[in-house]
Image 1 (cartoon, rainbow, N blue to C red):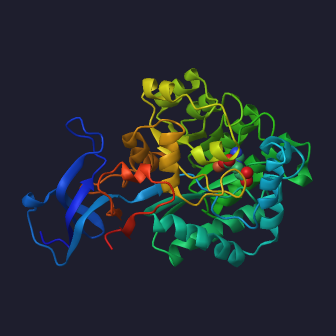
Image 2: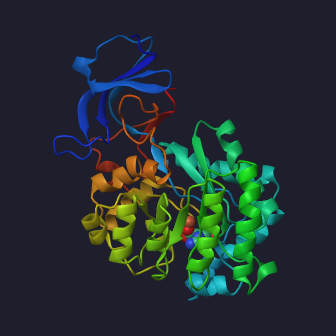
Image 3: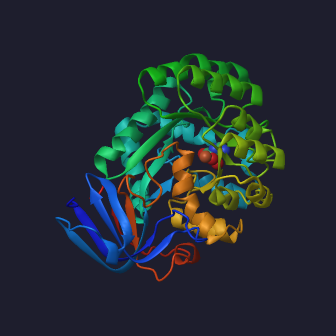
Length: 401
Ligand code: NIG
Ligand code: FE
């Protein structure tokens, strides 16, 4: 076989564990692409065929293109005023209860056109891509009515036409109770289940359904079940913002529904974590939100390791709890705040992030997978986690180009 393209003079972090090395490193390796897929990976000396085009990488490190599996990339406005309020002592929860927080972004987003949402999202997206992201997930959740939720998802779906990136959308209509349903969270959850989910599914605008289970500012477990039952009827997989501010049994609920992921999970119990692991639900850690709201209750990483839970790491990029368009920063925070190992953190933005999106065609350097690559000017993989605010990304390859 003649390959379309081959990359040489590179060190590979394949993320396919082997011989006790969780990163599956191949020094002085080569990768070959054919028809947008990886056709061959291995030591350069064993490269079996020639290619139409050869790229010399000058000793750069190549990883699978990074995957940001939890973002709220599409939104209007900002919440810098709330940042000031938190500095004056108000909590994230108190601001939300006073009609700020998510609802303040809802007001701005409802007023924004689809074009305006796309234009606002692009510079944030560009920052993620510049670090080596090749796939990301984008949630709705700042519309809280059918028209605006659909507009957000349409805006998100336009982004891959404007940039080289793969994108998955999640409908997060059950993110907060909108003002027109104030004090009637149950009625709104029913509206999401009975009207919004079927309409979004009919238009095929979402790849998954997400919700925010929280007994104070989100939805109860029972209300979340209505939403998840509707997702099931629509044939859509589910994800959950779970146990972010207290233990509401979100991890176990996500597991019961075979969710792709349960995210945040700072307060998830060891039982909830074990249930997730047994169900194959990925635990998505969001250290940027933990940092921003100055959470002090750490996710139980020891229980996650003991249960064999697949752990992912994501930005949670959003205007309130994590205005940080940097997945590399999350690698650092995942290690420094949560004490993840370098291998855990890197799996969290590659192989396990792919699993959190239900994507089995990416997240590692292996034959047959999409040829999505990120190239870095570093001397060892740990540098990706070690630097704070330094981006060593040299370039990206999306589907072999
Ligand atoms: O993932 N927990 C709820 N949702 C978001 C925050 C959204 C916002 O504050 O605008 C989160 O942290
Ligand atoms: Fe989130």
